[in-house]
Length: 370
View: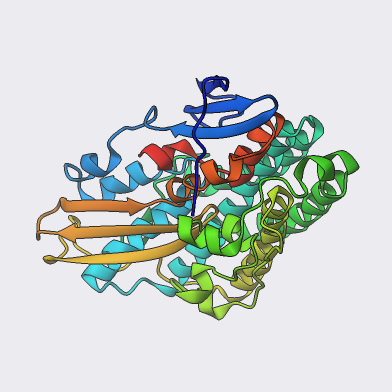
């Protein structure tokens, strides 16, 4: 499969970045253009590299969770969950039932909050101002709930190895009964505002297409893969936590273009609400933390766990040497893998569509660079 064409002396090189607006993190994209067409694209990453994997080797296991909060910094709880499950697998810990439900409810709320951010900023990418007002309105409602539960709006450190830091506040159920119908209405309003807009369709339909075969070859996962028609979701194909107890659908697209990648995420928010509603009905009172020593010391060994983050297959590999610090932590982040397809997506595209295509992948540079 050919990815690049070679630019000739007549092609013009254009720098996009490294800056934040429209590049969804500190990211540099170099493109070579022939008239209005992109001949070649070359992504440059590393501007946000903080050495999170190496830093993990000097922290205790519970301290490492704070580093995972800062990988995908708009889906913090989903990242926390992956690391906690990996260590719990290594230690053969039985997590209390109530903690499983709390984790699923908050992780799915975080998925909705992440997709609402995507919805808002993608509207800006295609030239619409109103969607970001709608998206941030709904996202703010979720962030307020998170603050009441974890004490933080984003950097939570709420999922701990063996359960959760503390039980839900007394008014959680009451607040959820108000929040869920409001989110449903908000998603419907977002759908009506943008999805069938003639201008939005013109900017996204048939733009940045990729086949299912090419997407798989590039290692694309999550909504970007499902937009090509591939029914692959770790929650279904390799269930973790208690996801096998719920009835929900996995939205897929057909064309693998920008519109499909957008609409798969919109539909995923509706399915997340279905999961949350079932979890709220099934959750019973009980313990929220397994009986563990104060200092976590897993036995020598290794574990590998895959989870479905809002951006795709988020996997954690942990190696223990029997001390209170991990010997090695390696993270397989979906944004890094999905970004590999960008050169293919941009080839022969119009310059005006470059940001639309980049935005449709929904990368977060915190997990790309780590």
